[in-house]
Amino acid sequence: MKHTDPSRKNAVKVSRLAINFGASQVIKGLDLEVAEGEFLVLLGPSGCGKSTLLNGIAGLIEVAEGRIEIGGQDMAQADPSLRGIGMVFQSYALYPTMTVERNISFALRVSGCPKPEIAQRVQQVAQLLQLEPLLQRRPAQLSGGQRQRVAIGRALVRQAKVLLFDEPLSNLDAKLRTELRRELKLLHKKLGSTMIYVTHDQVEAMTLASRIVVMREGQIQQIGAPAEVYDRPANRFVAGFLGAPGMNFIAGQMQLASSGAASLALPLAVDLSAYAFEARPLQNQPILLGIRPEHVLISADGDFAGKVQLIEPMGNHQVLWIESAGQTMAAVTHEAMNLTVDSELRFSFDPARFSLFDPASGQRI
Image (tube, rainbow, N blue to C red):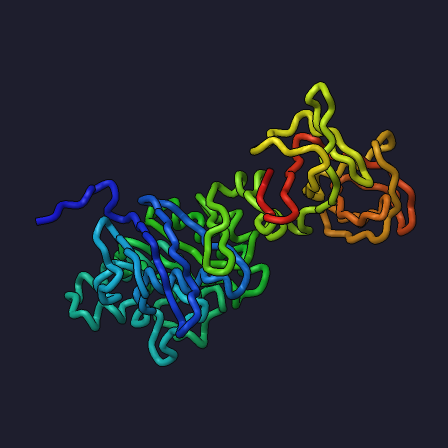
């Protein structure tokens, strides 16, 4: 009899996974490990393969090759009902004629679970999700947020090893998304379950995740804690995908002094002496400088002069679009400034926050 490591009973490991749709390979030899109790978020644009990967783990689509280990056992060819997973979809998919109580308990009733145990599990889940006053209502009598909580309850009541979420908040308005984001975070804290969550919304990813997996065209671009992925993107795609407004990119050439000091010859020249290079660049090598809008610093004694093209008030901050030396860039400021369109200003960059990329490969330098 094969024994599995109890510390990995709710862990997920994907090895060399390939998923094809006809002649098109959607997931391309992908490797991924999800630790016990982790809240892992799969992030990427539409069509990047994140929902396909999730459905492959759930067993809802066939895999061409590779392993999907859940709790140390390969489930790549196992029936979805045997995988010990609970899944919450983008659409609530509730039975309209059933009460909340019967929607939540449906899978247990079908499986022949004893009635006393069903009642106990439903009560526990309803209490956890604050659904107790709603148990006798039908879906049409619920708000969108309440319906999504019922859908989550239907997954939780099965006491699944792993919970999978496929863009569960995308049908909700902004206020409800914010509320349910908080509830999901608290739910994970209470349960300690292994959760894998798919979204294209970077705010959801940054606020929910223990780690983020950024995907593009069926492949993983970077894995890391939210702050790590945001502050030190592995390539230009990750740098540009995260952040609103996105990272500013300025093309230039590397300049190396005889002392070994590095700088960038740009329309806006900058000192790179404090930059931690992944690989030392060559003299005159083309470089792409990335700087996030919040690290463009507006001050009277700034290094560069510019003109305000556009001002976007955002409540507790404003986004300034600045033209300087033929470059247009965004700056975020939380300070009240008496600026108008066409105002002249001065600004600097925070040198500790630079990211440099190879223009050809897009990889971080």
